[in-house]
Structure formats: C-alpha cells, structure tokens
Image 1 (cartoon, helix red, strand yellow):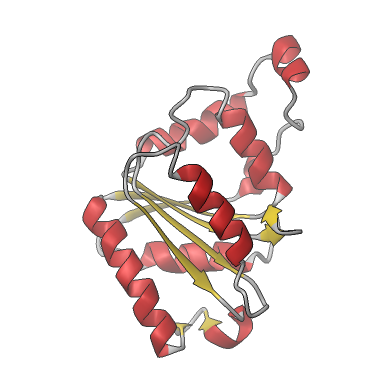
Image 2 (tube, rainbow, N blue to C red; image 1 turned 90 degrees about the vertical axis):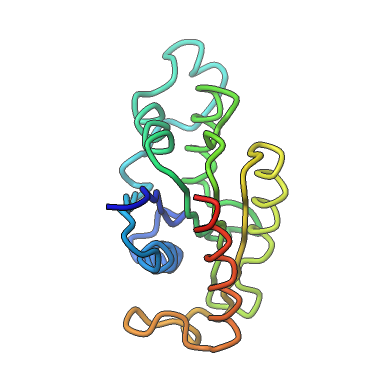
Length: 178
C-alpha cells in the first residue's frame, strides 16, 4: 500500500455530501490506504477552558489527533453552516488544538467544500484556507464544488469537465506533496 490518507467530511450529517466528496477525492489517489473518519464517532462535550481544567482533554480528541499523526496527508471537505464551520468540526478542532500547537502535524492538506447551491461552500472554504495556512507550513490546496446535485454522482464523480479539471489539478498538487 502507498501513502496513508486521512479523509473526512467536516459535518455530522449521516447523509453528508461533503463526506461523499472527501471519499471520492481520497479514492482518486492510486495505491493509497484511506482512513475515512465520521465526525459522529468523535462527539465530545462542547469545548471550554473550564471543562478542560476540570476534566482534561477527552480521549476522543487524542484519538482524532492520533489519526492525524498516523497519516501522510489530510483531505477535508467542509460543510458550511451559516457561513462557517459545522459545529461538529469546530468542536473537534477546538479540542485537538489544545493537545499541541501543531494541530495538523504539518501534513499536506486538500481542503474542499461543496453545497447544493452555486457557491459550493466557498465562504467556509476561504475561512479554512486562511486559518490553516498559518497553522501548517506544508502544501495546502483547495477546491470548491458548486451545485453538488447537478455536478456529482457517486458513480461518475465530478461530472462537469471544467470542474473535474480544476479538481484534478489540485489533487495532483496534493499528491505530489505527500
């Protein structure tokens, strides 16, 4: 097996279109061992400094962080909730950021977003890219897929040729950084 890829949709939805996109992206990497996470498996108390002081950092946060450390690259597709991260992701992010300063273990990252609408989660993707580039000195590439229902199927993947070309360009850059 080749490189180890950690992939997840940054959503708690059981029918997450972002999880579907992250899965598709990871499956495009030849000979990769893909670890596909479900954020529902990492549900923790809402982060607060008071909870950290009284109870410490939850084991699930350490477990999530161990997945990050064990991979060669990370693929995340963000759900956009009110123009920002989904709460499930933000809470995990808050907890793992307390474990050590290097949250993403300096791994190459492919950040994506999709939505049913024409902007394709661009607002949350911009937030993530702008935040993570200060937290990770490795390669970070991004891709937004608008109008998920029109532009993607599980059988075909990304259907629109210009979007597929843009996706492939970003994926190739990510793979080269692994």
